[in-house]
Amino acid sequence: MYLKAVEINGFKSFGDKVYIDFNRGITSIVGPNGSGKSNILDAVLWVLGEQSYKNIRAKESQDVIFSGGKEKKPASKAEVSLIIDNTDRYLDLDNDTVKITRRIHISGENEYLINDTKSRLKEIGTLFLDTGIGKTAYSVIGQGKVERIINSSPKEIKSIIEEAAGIKKLQANKIEAQKNLANIEVNLDKVEFILNETR
Ligand code: ATP
Image (cartoon, rainbow, N blue to C red; front, side, top):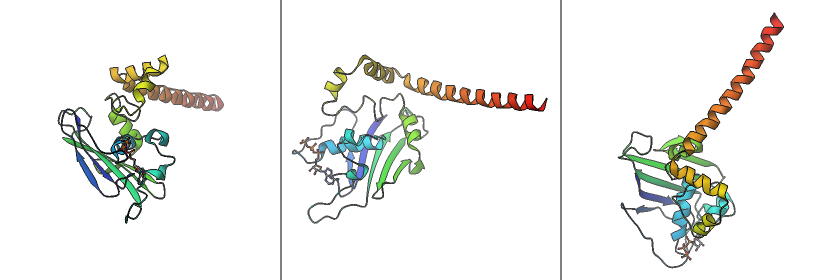
């Protein structure tokens, strides 16, 4: 699995649709200050479901929509897609290419799509769980993050190691199972109560 391309349209400084191809291995993005290099990283985090606007250097949700430029009107929506090579089936989907899209309208409404089909953010989170990719995963290291990781609390470092070791998914399954079990116990109590009433 690797990130083949990022398609950005109306996100931050990208008023026009751009398609950025990545090859296997290392890619460097170079450009003058303020030309939008970090905005590409923000776009990737945003698709993965980043909910903290501070982490993508914005104040509120609509800030990510292109606000207009020289002779260019502001956009009415922002859309970013990650195009991922999945020929090794690393992601649990039977597709050679997986496209993950996030869209926000000027009204603030967010949409998430997996292979052009509307999905929920939770499904995207589950797809990337334990892959090292994700809004809080270690695959996206922005400016200052190395220092933040070094200065993290032991609990935070443990969480990063757990994600890398691939046990986060199991923990999520455990929490889900515990919730189901708690619901079943409540239902059992209710059944017992009704049985006692009718005896
Ligand atoms: P540096 O090398 O200094 O870190 P950079 O190449 O990483 O710079 P970015 O920080 O990605 O640049 O881009 C900053 C630019 O993006 C600024 O010019 C800012 O005005 C522009 N920008 C951010 N949000 C929007 C928006 N919503 N609409 C239009 N332009 C935006």
